[in-house]
Image (tube, rainbow, N blue to C red; front, top):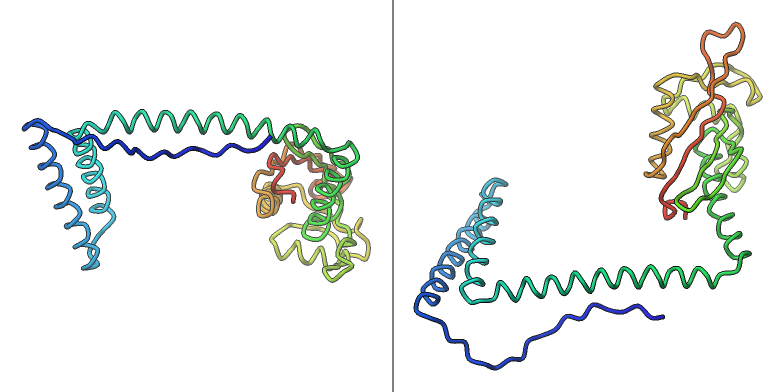
Length: 247
């Protein structure tokens, strides 16, 4: 199945146009008005004095005079018919392209699909491991997006062994530089806690959307440690609806 292209046709009709006196006067007036509007617009541009308000006014006038001109020439109906035909072709093309994508998808083996999804999930895990807290505990794909559960535990950036590696202390320092409120000091990830507060949730959303604009936080789970002044984030469940962002 090949993609069909939109057909833009030219009109080779050589019939001489004959207008009534009234139509001829309308064409002349619209043409004069259009020339005046264009001359004024170009003059303002040349002088560097064209402001946004005047630009909007002149564009509106040019559009109106152009419509009057084509209407006087009996061409508006042709334009409307051509636009409707073109929109119909576009709708038909979209339908065919969806069928083509489905056909191409059916040619992939289950193993191909599994490997592709694994690569997409791994792209996200690598990013979260290096730029985020570190650990993705669950991930799954649905028909309309990617779902993942992020641990609130700070772990080292083990995906970054090729040059972006940070240990737990460095990750905590990096996150604090972003503005995250973190309690605890130590050599192990369990010693650092992401405080459960509105500011931290806002920063998580900003961090996610900086890389995955369609990302949404669906649910968060908190843990209240005995004797602690505030709770800590345990799990953050997120959803990314645009598959293209995972490549």
